[in-house]
Length: 345
Ligand code: ADP
Ligand code: MG
Image (cartoon, rainbow, N blue to C red; front, top):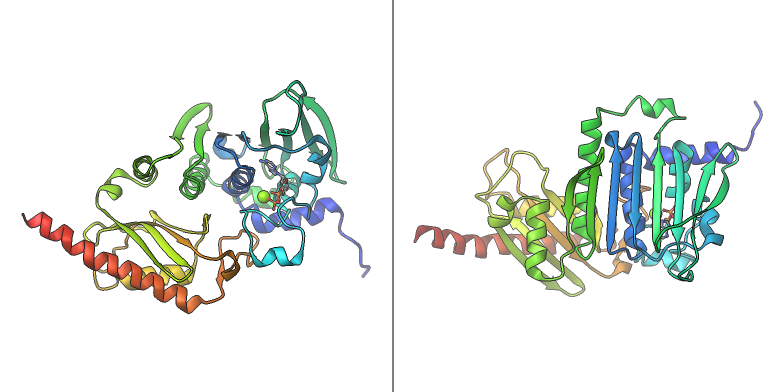
């Protein structure tokens, strides 16, 4: 047996195996990049459930021509520089892997015009291609911002292609992914198109009232009208958001959203804490709905746990758990009863 170094393409494809599971995983990475770039409007166009095309257009700060190639290179990022930076991550991305991974399993074009470019200058497109991951750069007139186009996902990785589901299923995952990112970034307007038709429009929320409307349109108005408002803090921890009244419940956990410092997570500690607070209030087999935002010192939560960054690790998990469980429980008991009393009148 001889040991050989993997080609850059193969190395990227292996990395892609961890983060690019299906079209919605591509959408997640690209939406997060647009948010990190300070975009205020993000448009997402997908065709055939994202298998034929995923195009994300943002009005963020863009990428300079000289850096387009680097943006597509593995382990290249503008978001961190030193080991210390890992102690407190303030952006959604930091691994410098998404674009390289995606470009190894699809046909990717990255086009951008940097906010630093002069008004009459053009934008540029970088097209990833081939075995050596070389990049071809061409002019493309466009406004300031970035357009990423991902075509024919998994065209060169049949093993993954086999796992793609029906167009409708993949589309539903994409919409769900967009909802999560939209809930995490209320200041950003989102539009989603599927096969040329607008399927979801989420305007930016400036005021509290608009923020509420947004929750209604993303989660459901039914949820919003029966939800309790929560806002609690101790020390460096703050938890706020909307919780379903114990009388309102669903039998699937579809509408459960938790964000930690603006990042959608699926965390056992958090889920357990919330479940515990609802424990004796819900009929068996029923689950609550919620949109909750946990804010804490970036230094007290490690997001560098898993490539997809869905999981986090708290430096004081016990304190976080107990705080959340108590905050949710207090909210349910106090406001829940008030609501009952009003209902009786
Ligand atoms: P990461 O997000 O972890 O840094 P990516 O591979 O997703 O890694 O992106 C690489 C780099 O490309 C980013 O660090 C950023 O500088 C740049 N980039 C990617 N997408 C955008 C975008 N939509 N707008 C501006 N810059 C972007
Ligand atoms: Mg990224």
